[in-house]
Amino acid sequence: MSARGAARLCLGLLSLGALFSLGGCAKQPQAEQPREIIVGFAQLGAESGWRVGNTADIERAAQRAHVQLMYKNADQRQDNQIKAIRSFIASQVDVIAFAPIVEEGWDNVLREAKEAGIPVLLTDRFIRTEDESLYAGFVGSNFLQEGQAAAQFLLQKTAGQNHVRILQITGTEDSTPMKQRQQGFEQTIAGDSRYEIFQTISGDFLRSKGKECMRNVLRETRDIGVLYSHNDAMTLGAIEAIEEAGLVPGEDIVIITVDGEQGAIDLLKQGKINCVVECTPLIGDVIMDLAKKLAAGEPIARITYSSERTFTEYDSDLQALPPRGY
Ligand code: AHR
Image (cartoon, rainbow, N blue to C red):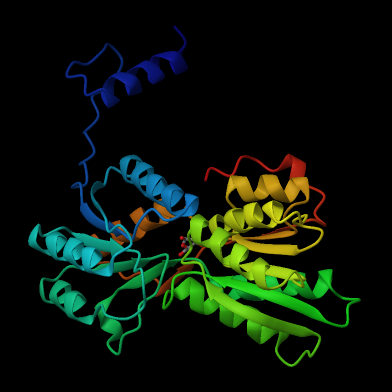
């Protein structure tokens, strides 16, 4: 056996915890294993493919990082999320992570976490609070930038038009993505009189509601130049309603959506969607890294944004895109 082969064999046996030594293979001191930390993660629900992908990614990342995950799903209810956080405090987890369904109403429970000495990491969405010390940091997407990117595509696509009528279907009221995607989009086209957002309605990030909203609007008018929808789930529902009404999505109505689920990218390739602004749910590894730092008492960045892109009908690499994973 070559010297390299023998070395590899030694390493293999050591990593398996072999208790004996081989001729010519010196016994190595075993590296001390870091203590496994416990992270309590309160997910807000399972309202979209994005959310399901986010949960699966966090579970996989916890396994990879040897983090013990206590997971609770709040089924779209803030009171359930608060209960979940209280149960993590009672269990004395090392770190609490949660994706706040809405921005308001977290101070009391987060004060309890602070008093118990448990650091809190916000994932995906922000909270609104007077006391910034109630959470250690945030990891997720820049929703304001997503709204701006959606509007940039609109400006490009409709450059030669005099009057563009836009229907906006928003996400869950008082949630960060709903507020910032709306703000980023509206601020970017503000002052340009060619653009008229003739209606803004909430679809709560749900496919069924996206379809219902679109169906109701189409009963009133067919004069819709653009649909700006705050997530793919609602967009997929809206497209069903558009097709049922005998219109062609992507042609009769320009469609701009946010997330980048596989289903939306497939429709972009087919020409039924014109622009997909990416919002990645694949933040599990970063969450685990930050949670380990917090558990070790190390400082973390106040905000960690994901890096994202925009996919449009003008891109030449659409057919070569790797599977999205959500
Ligand atoms: O907070 C992220 C948003 O929540 C995603 O855009 C949406 O699909 C999800 O429900």
